[in-house]
Length: 296
Image (cartoon, rainbow, N blue to C red; front, side, top):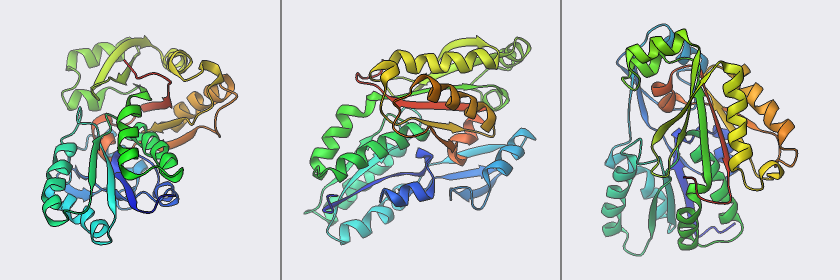
């Protein structure tokens, strides 16, 4: 592993604390509000994920905020003081302003540490999709890439991480204004489970309206068959994140493991964390894998 620099990320990449520690990737938390009480993301320690989603299902209001510039400065500074460069992967600019805050912090720190390099990269990814990109980047770091080489590699490969997800509960989307009340009622009556993905600009995009959970699970796996590198011979990693619907996530994982026998290990299922979950609410299953070509 190249130890001349540190690879960092943000907690909404939705991997476990143990995973980040094993890969030697420090992360900066975001803030979320639950019924106007502010919390800092801490891997579900203060507000356990199951309790978090139960509160949302009961009608609790949520909102979120990204780290401010001062928080990024405080996060980056110790590594620079140790004489290390930094490659930082930031949550997609298509859904958050975190990238701009991190870049502003980098500009401030460039004056204080003129001999150090701080590469802030827009991951164009979210949740465990960003987590998969971070993990992939850590593999390149461990293979010996320099900080500059890794930054270029991430920019060249970030769009090869696919995000496909569906929800069986539109209530949080309706409360947050991302789905109209009429569409939410209509979707509920017809048992519609929207299938969405993250587009090349890093924005959430609705792709299909699928009736019934059983069908949307099959359609989600078909997207992996269509886009994964080498199709059913895909030999990379696959992550799933879920918001209080583990059985649905497990159903997707089982079908993937049956369909893709050459997977690198089992499908890893993580929680959708407090930050992303504040916007999705319960009932969301998201699938992440890598392709050989950039997503479109």
